[in-house]
Amino acid sequence: MNRDNYIEIFTAAFNKLFIESSYHSPNWFWAFSIIPVIIAYYILKNSNDQVDVKFSSSEGFQEDRLFKYLQHIPFVLVNLAVIAFVIALARPQDAKSWEQTKTQGIDMVLSMDISTSMNAPDFKPDRLEASKKIATNFILDRPNDRFGLVVFAGESFTQCPLTIDHDRIIELFKDIRTGILEDGTAIGSGLATAVQRLKDSDAKSKVIILLTDGENNAGSISPKTAAELASTFDIKVYTIGIGKSVYTIDRKTFFGTQQQQVKSNIDHEALNNIAKVTGGKYYRAESAETLKNIYEEIDRLEKTELASLKFYKKTDLHLPYLLIGIGFLLISKALGLTIFKTIG
Image (cartoon, rainbow, N blue to C red):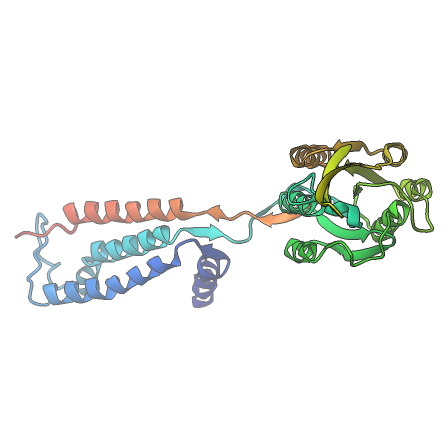
């Protein structure tokens, strides 16, 4: 084996150990600093020592320079064992290994009613704030999904296009309030705008969650037309009618503040038809707990394997180095007790 072969072998080993591998606990490499100390101690200890080798006859060997070099083999093996143990403690990991894992991932748009009736106090603190909080938790529980946000009242508006940046969409949720759009309830427009956000998506599953507390009384698009549009693009729509059937509000009158009962005007038929046409489901939420349960059910229903994503899975390689270190120690001890055993 020539010099080039040795260089090639060394280079391959170096690349495998220090370039193609990563380490879980690289701080252990500081332990390599103990090796020069061990070497210095060994040299100092043996500089004045007379080494006697036990053989049947030592004649002819005492001046053999080759043997004088070979007698240091046990010490060299001990140092190699220390190196192997330090590498094992640093826990080398194969940085090239990876596995393909099926993951959950769906494109969803939340279309939310922000008409003034969403200020009703039958939810605490009101319908809109309770809806925002529960929807936010829903988003946080689905880290692999892309979300978009549409709001509507008398008109509709895209608050946030589809994004995987969940922190961004949650920040935008905080800015939602009643009064930022002309009042009214344009369910058809709110649904159509959400469809516009999803129609070009290449996701295998596209979902709209539409939440409202009223009936369609504004906008130029009917709920039926918007539902048929969603169906054309294979978009499933879950509709939620929020609010108690009858709730109490405080009204200021000439005689002071008085409580007054108000009836919700949710168009159950229209919401149910939207869900039916698109293959979704209509839900009725009369309390925050019910609304939370609805989102949890949608979460369970919409668990589709969207794509095969690559995740790096590092394989721990410390065991071979540990075994190599133990092997070096055993060989060193065996040589010290046999061939290189000294006489005190």
